Length: 220
Image (cartoon, rainbow, N blue to C red; front, side, top):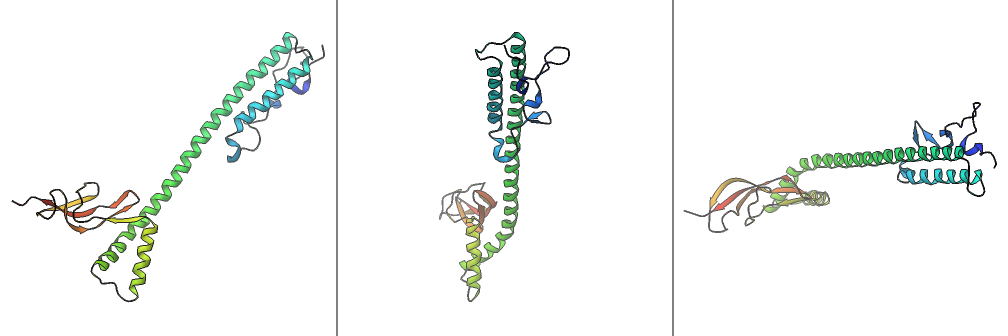
């Protein structure tokens, strides 16, 4: 039987005992295996790449020991040690990969939340302007060149998904409406908006400012 190939399993030391399978045979960084550059693009497939490459290495090592697939107990022990090392390093890489993916998701989520909060704070400052334009339009006070300005403000509000709400006859919703008073009336059903004192605004589905209203009650 031919001697084991040093390229795969390491040569026996001076004492005649087999050396521990060399970790240098399998690429690693700071005790954690890698399959090349640790970039975002290859992180998802790094564990699979490691496993396949190392399995191929072990298969070639086994084939080099004996053409008929049999080898000595010493060789079998060395191969078993190498396979155990592969399993350990593969588990390390899979755990590290999962931690990295979770970390990246958290970073992306926090970055998106930060952008949304920044945009919301700017849009909140825009609400009084949009409200003033809407009030002026209701009273037909927008004339001359200001019509162009008002139109651009409305276009910007629509683009930012800033939506005004609150109308007489709407069912009272404590999430959307702030009740400032009760108004006895037969014009609308009880617990409906009888008068809009100040319109409310939503950014998508988030209430930026509730509508301030008078709530209808039955007259005595």
